[in-house]
Image (cartoon, rainbow, N blue to C red):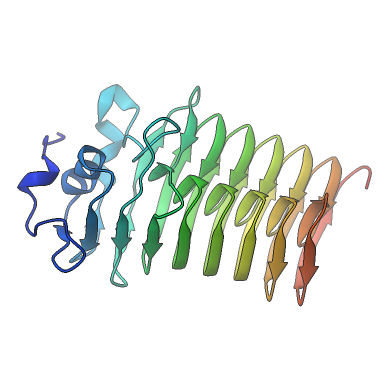
Length: 251
């Protein structure tokens, strides 16, 4: 059963010099109480219990469009394992729902996540407005539009990341990012990505920069389907490699 933990009761003080310390799933959920604080993992987190939280809805994403996460989260190389989010009718779904420009998420591994949402769905972040670096996400990620193994929609900086697993959606579906509107650098995916339109092994839809990145795996769609990027509306795609089995109908 979920234990209600307040952020102010976590070890540490929530400052950059003395971040709040997180070692279990209830403490991870407590981040929603203080969206501007500094947090760090001090051990791996077994989040398998989240499947039974909130009448089966699971973990509640940290931050949304009206109240965005703008703190920092340092995983210290540790993992969040088996987190469950089951919110098929909701937007901004991931461990972090929506992050602001000053948010920093770094050095964390997401293992065997099971995450379902509607729009803006990612394993780690639904909509990223900040910086995500040094992260790895693995699991089954399912949504409708803007669906990514790591991030649903990116409007800031993603650097040195890896996503593996299965990503399923309708439009703007990518192994790492569903829709990219800023920078993706040193990203790689090894995923099975399935969608209808604008489906890519790394990025479904691009209007920013994708560079020094690669994708392997399988990509299945109908229209605008690519091994690396499904659809390039603008921006640049440079120094990319792909070794993907691609199946589609047009474009």
